[in-house]
Image 1 (tube, rainbow, N blue to C red):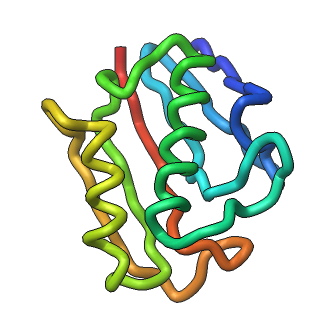
Image 2 (image 1 turned 90 degrees about the vertical axis):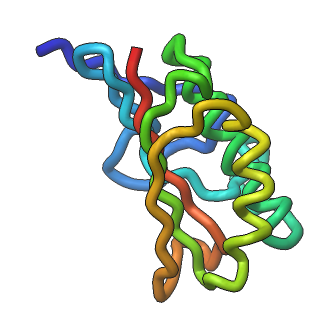
Length: 126
């Protein structure tokens, strides 16, 4: 098994004992991304729309660093602080997966790191 750690300055640095992404045998596992601006390491201002946009940009930066695209994504798990934000999150998310979207699960959870509204983890395959 070849395990490759993916790290890019274009996505938030890991704030714990985990990697931004890990690739094993043509499969890329991206850690849950929260709406941190990689330049400032702070949560982006705004509502669920702005936060989801930043999360998707962070996912895109890690995909790119590993040599993948949104088209390679096969599974997403979306964690929301409030299911009332599902529709707005879904509208932003859908722009990135307009055709042949990945399989997905979405959950409301009690709390997310740093008090953010959304976190998305991603699996991509080449």
